[in-house]
Amino acid sequence: MSAVRSRFVVRTFATFVLFSVLAGQFWRNLGGWWGFGAVVAIVLVGSVVGLITERPDWKWRRFPKALIIFMLLATLSILWSFYPGASLLGVGLQWITTIAALFVALVLTWAELLRTLSVALRYILALSLAFELFVAAVIQQPVLPFFVEYEGKIPLAFYWSRGLLLDGGPIEGIVANRNLLGFIALIAVIVFAVQLAARTVKRGWGIIWLVLAIVTLLLTRSSTVTLATLVVLAALVFALWARSVHHQARRPVYIVAAASVVTGVAAILAFFPLLTQLLGKSDDLTGRFDIWHSVTELASERPAFGWGWVSYWVPWVEPFQGLAVRKGVTYLQAHNAWLDVWLQLGIVGLVVFVALVLATLWRAWFLAIDRPRLGVKDDAPFAASALLPLLIMAALLAQSVAESRLLIEYGWVLLVVMAVMTKRQQGTPAPMP
Image (cartoon, rainbow, N blue to C red):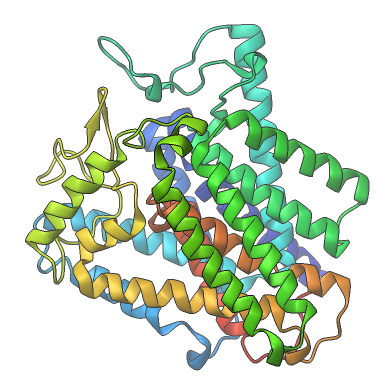
């Protein structure tokens, strides 16, 4: 009985951790930075206690080495950082996020991860739709975050919600950002669809939550998430195709996949103005071209080891002061995870980061398509669950081109969780429940 209670406590806290990293802006808007700091402290202490008390069984050889090297490099970058104080803060936050991710990855099973992630996503979607309905129907005007005072004209990006639900969106939800809410909805679509296919949830409730996730995704009107959705669908199609043929007859799968990537990139370049028009974007992708240009120039000044790790940009220190400002909004990221790593950790850090991501994607791909080689029968629950890491990685990689979320909060947690859990799964005959 005590063991059952222990697993319940573990799953409940893991749900809180996943909710907090997915909806960090909710805590900041609700309780300010002090309130958010309290949540961070709870996550850190709880994760450490969980790792100590649960004593997860893990072996050194089944731990992603690229993750260790990346974290060591980020920590050591304090020594050559242009802004050592900011780097100390950024590295500290990175370690807190990593510890939370390790708690999730090492303590939960695949089945528990799917379950806790599903619960966290349901809370976010339900609260977001209820919040947007309340703002639109009752308050009937835009709402600003609590504990924050603004002067002069307030940019639209500063509002918690603009109350546009009844107008068909775009909506920001409790996370105060339509791109962020849209991506959370995309992850929810993946998780809920996997649960339905794996038959780990009642069909009626599963369909309801899947529909709500799709509706939320559409209401955000996020072009970034629209493209990420297409990438996820492509990954799903190729994975199912690869599953349907013998592993020695998969050459056509890889040839068509490579050709599709080349064709897709060529089509984007050739029809870029038309594409931006269809997605409702400006020709400079809402200022991203200017940001990328500024970041590239800055990264070129210290190309080898970068300016020092800082995670979120710190706007009160050079060289971030005024680096990316658009329509009164100061952006705290390069809007491209790969450029951000190059800027902060140089080419050396970028190589390590690429190794971490590609190795995780490689393991996720073969976990998704090689069920028989893991010694597992071709049963539907495992077949569906095995797709989860690949589809989440596809979503994260697609978003990383236009956002740097892969390096912070939910992006980093999901990457670390997928990296560690797929590494532990590698070569293990036990199925994913």
